[in-house]
Length: 274
Image (cartoon, one colour):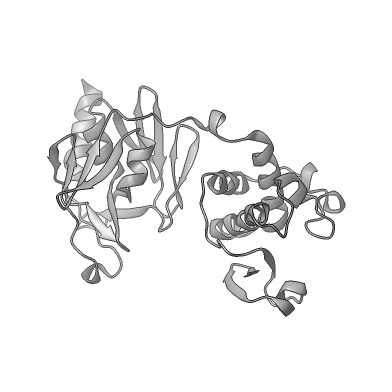
């Protein structure tokens, strides 16, 4: 009984807060959302950069009424049978059953009129994917339907060899960089695998002569930090911040790419070229 009362209190608190996204006046109003045919009404629902965001707690409860909701040191948690999900405002991902689902604009915040953080906002499609629900657009409304294919858990989804190679090179090259920079380094490796000018396996890309020097640097003997492992998993999920980059180097440092290729972007301490 106490858990249900706590959940009810949390839900009531969720419905009293407001979202203040950047450039809110420039965004269109949020479309109606229906969950299993029932209108989902919540003041958090908002559009940010043309993406519909919803409260992870409120939407999770609409899809799984038995779910237990909580906050733990700024982390929004959802627990139910077969579901372990969390989101931290500012992170570039939603965690669900060992998977890291990319949120390009980052997990956003909902705050009460008093300025107190009371919810985490995530894209409705990403949350639906995490919970095995489907999303469609019908009659100018978002339709969310439960009962779809459950999310394959991380220990089954991620190829261990690819994860090992990616996480170790990401850590060796950008372990001290922001998450976006770590993802970008992983993107360069996977972009090369898909490009005819480079080897067509991740192993051969990593060990291509004159490129990442894993043996000389001892990259494979180092222990990747958690951020590098998460970045590798995000890359394997399809996260992409530099889809056309095939080289990177320290900002301001001269290399073949800096002299012969266009600089596409700078992220943290790295310049990316394509």
